[in-house]
Length: 89
Image (tube, rainbow, N blue to C red):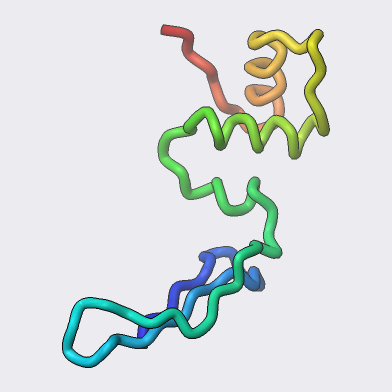
């Protein structure tokens, strides 16, 4: 049996699967799609921040985005809250 769980304590996300005979294939027995933890908690282990991670952290922290939000506003908010420095290349 193979069990995958979210690393955040108490999160309900998981996958449980059993092997099919001697093959490398598995049958999914349980799949809980949604995490009960926040994206912020899950992303703590990320060594590099992808645009998706930065966007989710920003939305979790600030709430929403409108047309007046500039990239520099996002960078300033992430730096202030999470000590993430955005480097433009």
